[in-house]
Amino acid sequence: MTRMGIGLQMYTLRDVTAVDFEGTLRKVAALGYEGVEFAGYGGIEAERMRDLLQELGLQAIGSHIGLHLLEGNLENEIAYLKTIGAKYAICPWLPQEARDAEAWRGHLVKFEQYGKRFREEGIAFAYHNHEFEFEVELDGQVVFDALYERISPEYLQVEMDIGWVQYSGIDPVSYVKKYAGRLPLLHLKDFRSGEKGGQIDTVELGKGDLPLEAVIAAASESSVEWIIVEQDVCANPPLESVATSIEWLKQNYLSKFE
Image (cartoon, rainbow, N blue to C red):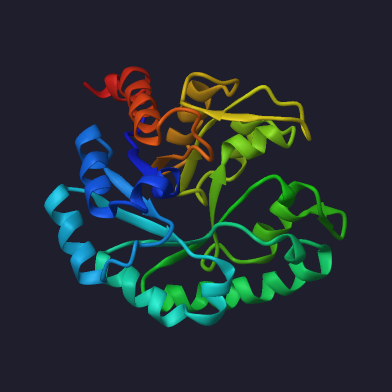
């Protein structure tokens, strides 16, 4: 089994970072996370963020960059990522009005353009899924698959959210294997309950229904670089939730490398 890095998507801690971004990063490092994936920077200048991450021994994995920022602030986003040493830029989500088949045809063109620009600067562009990419088809193919079939791996990589894959009725283990070699980033989350279209709970790792150990094993064999913990909504205090999740990873994954 190949040792993958353990990261945290900072969106999970958005309520805490809104109060104290730097202090929250210090707590994330103290918990044992090795890298962070951003979803905004809390107004911290790039040079200060770079120095803080270096002080804490945290790797800047990359950042979730909203569609509006890709369209209107691309060069500034590139500059920030380069300053903090991040390798990945990820489109994380699309608004409701931008999800029909016609809109997706436009996204395919734009995503390739963004991917080319990021590549020129040594950054890989990726897309992070939810469930709606499995609900729309382009020429008989679900958008999730069409996206990666029609755009070259040079310009678009996969950031797979296995929670939403399973929620969509697809076996997450098989989908990890399907995208082996093009899947550097894996969002590891756990869902409890969950018939498609019904109420679901995002919970700490090991407290839900996903076959996490099988997913991790498949990821390790599929050239995944980072397992990234993300919990969309935390019933418990968010820092407590991410502490619970990394303890599960220490016991069920990292212990294998001791």
